[in-house]
Image (tube, rainbow, N blue to C red):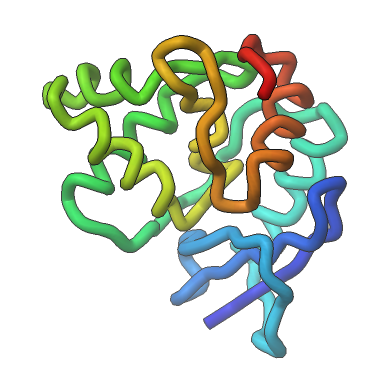
Amino acid sequence: MYQDSLDTPLGTITITSNDGTAISSVSYTPVSDAPSCEITQRAKQQLQEYFAGQRTLFELPLAPTGTPFQQRVWQQLLTVPYGQTVSYQAIAEAIDNPRACRAVGGANGNNPIPIIIPCHRIIGANGTLTGYTGGIHKKIWLLQHEGADFIPL
């Protein structure tokens, strides 16, 4: 396992790669003593650029671990452009499972690579915010950083 950490406006972020070839997680927990590698260093650089307002799209190999359904949801999240939001319902419809709105919410909440897989861009059908792995205040910060439209709490 390889890890790197980055101090951000949201606190310290830990970037993990299980095998050194793709990012497997991004978390808001402290880094362990694992060494970094080229891919975690690239992710760190791209996240620094994102937080500095210089990057709107990540170009990294990703390897999130999850069920086939979660994988489909996470792939769909990657299509939501910077600064835009969509509803859980819209994601369910996009994966051809319009009745899976709650399951999409569950998959969104279990996203192991937040920010890079932009689960923060998914909001309620009425434009309101819902939960976020790192806390709703982090979701608000990310959406404001991107200039996205949403209804504040």
